[in-house]
Length: 438
Image (cartoon, rainbow, N blue to C red):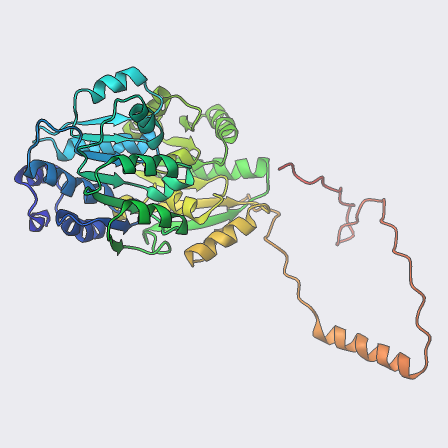
């Protein structure tokens, strides 16, 4: 029960109204330590409830001692607008019975409007590092009174090139602040950030990367590039049982193209990627949450911070390039222990990526064949050396040497046949296929 943490009564009242009863593993481990004022480095998988793990002790601290004349007392840094918006909503839910105010500062919104928002002196500032640095440079972001600094999805901020911005903002906060750093993975690149911003932190490792939600079925379907791959995607979206689905691509161009194809096929679809302005991105997420559309096609910009009830199917149309990205993509389904399905479409160009992700996660994906849509690609060919045949050949060679046989003249390499290749069963010749365009 959350009452065991001795949180402020107004927070307990909010938790009760939200039907929060049992804390998750990360909440049970992090909240008591954070309430003691310790710096924490927490590794916990996506969807494990880590937002509440840092917000509840942060809000408790602000409520325990009111400072009406101070500037912002808490700064929360996040990698994407979507995650920042989601965090603001969580603050509003948990602080509903308090007078604590928070404001959102991200790219894609009017700079002057944000400056005016900051001048209202909110207790909590939530934002992305790039825009927050711009506001700081403009003199709109005083950080002298910050008591708690939170770096959420720190690994993602590092991947997105925000390390310098994060370190600059952290350096402007008081040295005696409390810092809470959360990440879903344990990347070695985080070392500099951890050593710079944390003071004698306690490390809480709540899960290894391979300890993904057991309720999420992880499958792969072998596909051929082009029309066959699209046909498999259309079949899955037509025949799988799901409430809401997200289809991931690696590029914006691919996301837009697939969205057009799916709409033409009669599906209700929205697209989400970095070139969409803030208004369109908000609309896409809201429509998905409300059930106005069932399918969202997105690049990895949506892999962080997208928390949608009922999102129970994730399809990797393009395989993610790294194991970390796979973890965050499939983390969109199976939230808080719910069931879900993650399906990756694997063509010949994706096999090595899939294998490296399997090694990273220390698991084997379940291979699945779609009825009537079996791919001609069967995976890499296995070449087995025949020891018996090699031994026979060696014996013959040795025998020839003993008999004084002359070495055979070197043969010229055979010319490549220009005629079409014949099929193995003697049927009509097979046409040569041009390699598929990347």
